[in-house]
Length: 305
Image 1 (cartoon, rainbow, N blue to C red):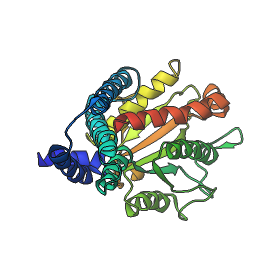
Image 2: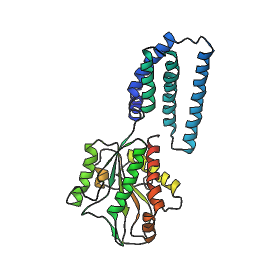
Image 3: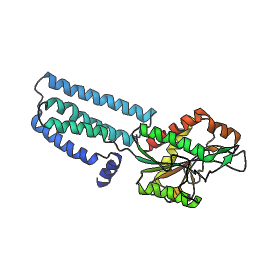
């Protein structure tokens, strides 16, 4: 029970408040609310129908959207409590002080879902350009895609911080620069770290999309798998490189921004700058618009959103 409540609290910041408000509201309903006429019964019927409409919507989300079974159950529980507190109590206690508590419960339940603090890391920057091909520098691709990703996440209510928003490095040397990126996210207690990079190789034939996490099975593996699946949905014809040796699609390595971050961390390799076709894709408006959307879809699926 303690573990369930703890997990619920991580998903919904208002879970402890929900428990208190629901207990308070239930006590009021039992002691005060007695349906006496058709209007009372109609209100109850309306609420029940609305609840079932929400159930149909959640089932649709689970099948066609990003919803997970656990998230659906949690959402339905809070939707039901929201309508009980919001609809019935506000109607019953109009003009009474208890209405204030009912309204507060209604607001908290519908605004209480946990929003993540996500650190977006645009790889390289400043005097550390990363890969360079045909006059294009990796640092610029990384920043462009990182800012688009952050904008989308913000539009969905998540809090976003960036390791950089301009063309600058965090330190004079590459090694220190990487460590400071991890420290930046750790110091701000981010919930998730996404590092954006563009790949390159001596062999110009190498191409495709990749995801990297730290060694071993961690929560980052699930996030990477969901991002990978979302990229498949958005780009079915895109070649997606994967390492299935440990049962999931991501590659694993002790990269500084993955090894030293305290939160789940995923490094995205958008495509190979060293491959002519991949380079054109990186420059295309379609890829620049839809790749961030795919990454966001994978992140939201990971948290049941």
